[in-house]
Image 1 (spheres, one colour):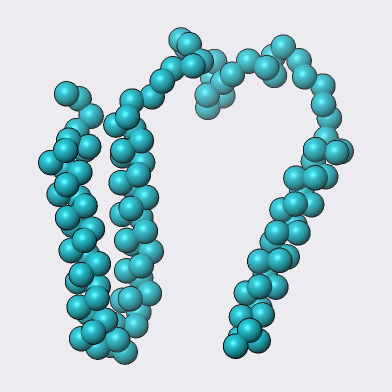
Image 2 (image 1 turned 90 degrees about the horizontal axis):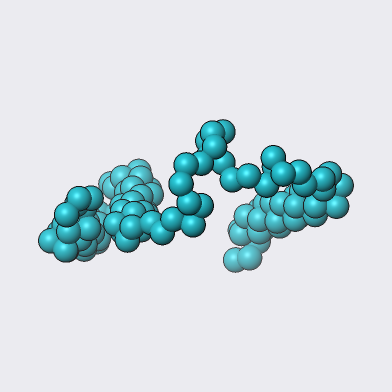
Length: 119
């Protein structure tokens, strides 16, 4: 069984080695001359306005978590749709259950006010 997964493991190993090599080489070979201009925080190429330690609203984090939940839903829907005919009724009912749980998650978040920015 491990022979079937060998290409996946080999690809992960190569990706890990390349990533570690890039991080190591840039930290060893890159220039390290910090200037006052480089130390200034910026956002999208323009100077920041206000304090640099502004606390973000909890609504931002709730929206980010909800995005991740429904993004994962889209990731699972694609392979299911491509195998729809082979899975039969069991696969259909499993996906209905999955979508129902995610729907309940959305209704719960909506009732709690997680989707409202101003209150």
